[in-house]
Image (cartoon, one colour):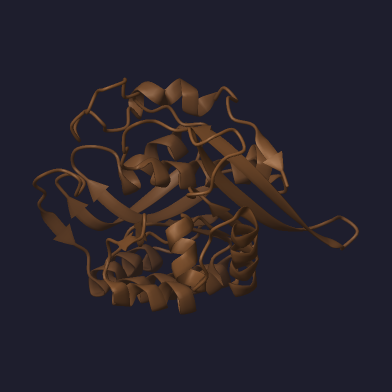
Length: 292
């Protein structure tokens, strides 16, 4: 049966972030994807120059009303990412709530894109909207460590801190929380990036349980833009196929490697999405999750 995703994220003409990073992999895996672009930029903002437009809440409403008038506003998943405007994000919440009334089984996957490494790259007034409105209606939440700290007001210094923060986020709404990147030290050394996941589940007998996992990925000496958008899209896809097993819901991503001593420019660091088609369809499992 057709599985349809409404993806509300950024768009770039050149490169792969936001909808450009998420749509193709989801389509390759058999999902129908309807895209609304929260912004339309020439390229991501890591370049020296960028130009473009920002979609307003009113314009978002116009697009959604067109879908609604044609009675094609029926979705299995909603996926959201980068936005800079509070009223736009509040409108997203209204749309999510309406679509959940139409389909109570709909799953909302939210990447609360706000910042990283201790600094925000969206206006600070967007935080209360995520914290007080968005997280409450999300089913799957994929913050990085900094975003999780912002949402809960708690600092993460240890793995226990991270598990406590994920539990707080569960209490705010989502059944699945994945910290997509952290500053925690891996048991295998500082050459590995640690991600953590937690999933609330109901067993067949009605009892409840929580699955917690740790994923350790080799670090690459370069900053690739769009990997978080790709990660969240792949989490959606594999969670669809394995809804009750978080440890097999994470897919290693192909990215161009930066060699020792090399400092590629932003254009050279763009994700190679088309070249990765076979890896998306049939990934090699090179990273094993550890159950905590």
